[in-house]
Length: 213
Image 1 (tube, one colour):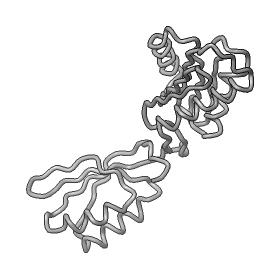
Image 2 (tube, one colour; image 1 turned 90 degrees about the horizontal axis):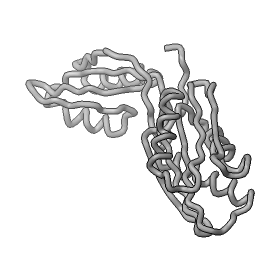
Image 3 (tube, rainbow, N blue to C red; image 1 turned 90 degrees about the vertical axis):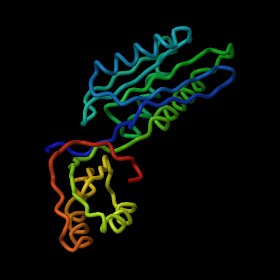
């Protein structure tokens, strides 16, 4: 895998707040192409067709090669630019943020708009959650039942993502680990099982790991 790790949004998320009677709703979602970003923007515009503005920004590509934004009728530089600046500061890519505004009758001024759309972008990103896309490998391991409790105790503190667990003559566990953790984890599992466990590596992929993992 030649690509390096990069940050993106983990899921679709929304949050809202009120500033001087105007309602702002931040929407964030992961996207994998410019087409997905524009489709999400169109979906938000349709869902909030009665809103005063649906301003947006999106960044596409592991190297943040594509950046687009729109003020959607707000004064130039007061909406789309603040949104994309938040995204750049959080270093998220393959992501789209739309901030919807329902005008409440009180003018906010240029500074007030910048602050509100900045806050809207922060709310959207926080609601969607940020994770890092790391080169990741998928493993399968057969666990003898007498070893399961000991293994579970280890897994609670290990940097893995358990995907599936099936029960038959043995317990079959499917899990993900970052390639950077692979050598240490395999060593730990060998030591934990006195060499009995032989995890099978069967896939390589990029996977979004939460920031705190």
